[in-house]
Image 1 (cartoon, rainbow, N blue to C red):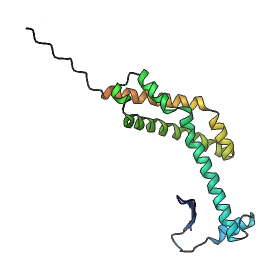
Image 2: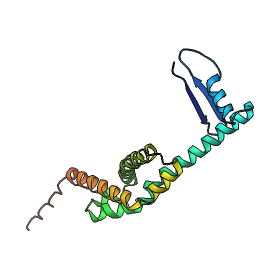
Image 3: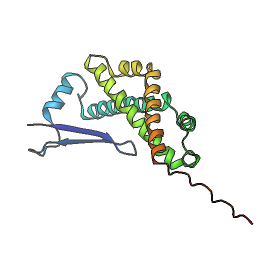
Image 4: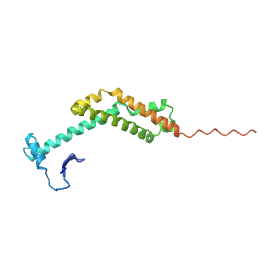
Length: 173
């Protein structure tokens, strides 16, 4: 039987613990709580909740640091500058919506590669925070990925650019 404990903070910072057991509807998973008690994390219900809240806060901090990696390695201003150098039309460069979508695409590609590299480090036995430190030290690698993705976007924008019409000839008097 598969059990799953869903622990999260709501927008107000209140801890929410839900046990997802499709076969049974219990409020607590006795085996999980027993293991946490053996580890000294759940002598009382309050200690259990505090432990789970600390774990969530630590995970949130790691997620926030992870989310900052692409932004630090390839800031929004650099995207605009690179697109300008690659000849993207001024109309696109002046459109915050278009730039925002382009930046989201660049960072999505970067974060996918960063997460994969992080998974490899953790699989090798590196602790989460140490892995994050190692990933942060590879800023040039992430910048190169962001630059490459920007080139792809610029090429796509250039391919979708309508041909500029030639202005009509002025009539001769």
